[in-house]
Image 1 (tube, rainbow over the protein chains, first blue to last red):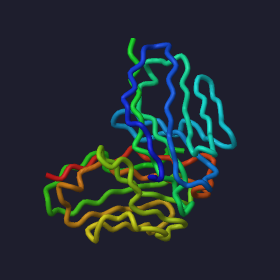
Image 2 (cartoon, one colour):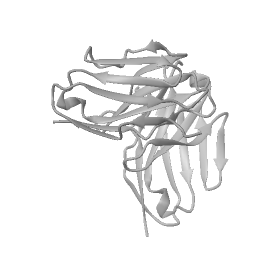
Image 3 (cartoon, helix red, strand yellow):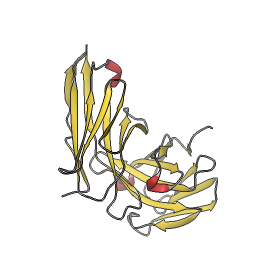
Image 4 (cartoon, rainbow over the protein chains, first blue to last red):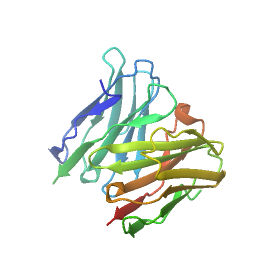
Length: 110
Length: 116
């Protein structure tokens, strides 16, 4: 299994929809995880940290399933401005740096 | 804080030329990372520094790539000679406390390199 794997998408959803992305990781010892957002031709920016079983921030909910080694990101009431690529981030196998997934592209349409 | 500052924003150069990318990390951040992003391979870690010392350069593709961090506020990534396959977006990122930081990494706006 790769260190981190994501469905590249794109996920095409209408405004107001709920959408969820999953990410699987290989390092069972990982303790901290992140979701980053990257807009077209911009740098990645931290969206959420994920600790324990999960985290919620407004319309965004991240959940962690350690037994199955996956992390999910749920976006409720999608906005046009949510259109971006979402990167799943986990510590590498040596727990020395962060490994970034290739990202899942989300397109929210009117 | 101004964030992580990279220069130049765009660089177009001819094959065989030397290219130098620059980065100023956030003040107080003791870790600095150089990443390369392409459509095919995503974000790849090239090298990282802790307290100005290179810790892991296993991601540097070959000897044509070199990186330095002469002080806590400045780092360079040099490619000599450059090749068309080096065309990518190069990001610099910094953080406190490394992988254990609860804030992840903060990225600069990147340098878009095109080698023709």
